[in-house]
Image 1: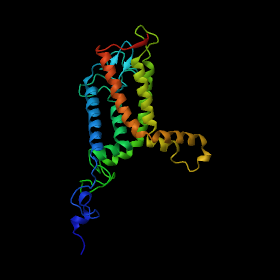
Image 2: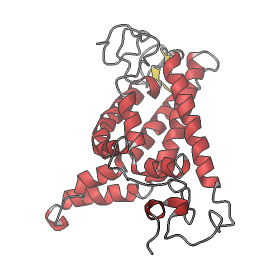
Image 3: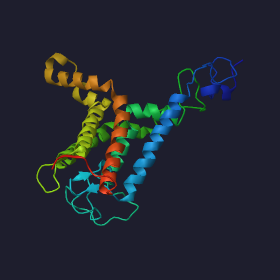
Image 4: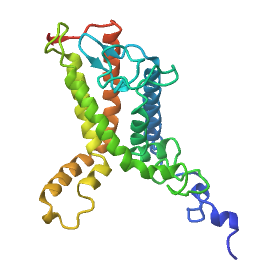
Length: 274
């Protein structure tokens, strides 16, 4: 006699192929800790970044030309004087639109569709599955073939936009070598900005889409030695993509928080030159 239709079509905890045990898993270690830490870490960043993107205060230090990445590029007449490095093609914006609205959706899309972040929030927020040898609670799984998950296939396009944004962040970091009286200046803020942009480059070019773009379609590496060299370098970085994904969340927050403190006159920038 065949199994009932409901049992045949079920999955997860009630999958007919699963061992007949009453508990969800036989694991006795703290398998739930990594998903929990991921939820806490990602949630903390999202809350902080959202608040800072909308407050419109303390994002630009005019004396030293420090601009937080959350507001770069600032392209609206709502931007404070000096913070618009590429002009202001957009008029005054209502308060419910962040000043970095041009690139923030693309950066969010790049992170959301990132191969590592997919694994992170699938396991932590959706519990699909939460850990190895732990059955997921969902009744069925359709993969990334329907909305909204079919949008994950746009990751390669978000990658190209992320390259442009990282170039803009690089320009901001170079432009910030400015003294209070003009000319060259160098302070702790510059160190933070440069470290942040270096790590952003490491995260961006270690992306799986970058690895595919540099050598993923080559059939004979020997015929393309330059692209093969690029592919090997990206591959080395790709093994640390998860590490860069988390580190850059931290450096983005650190960079923004430091600039906020200096811009609000809470602290003074530690100056080495100028």
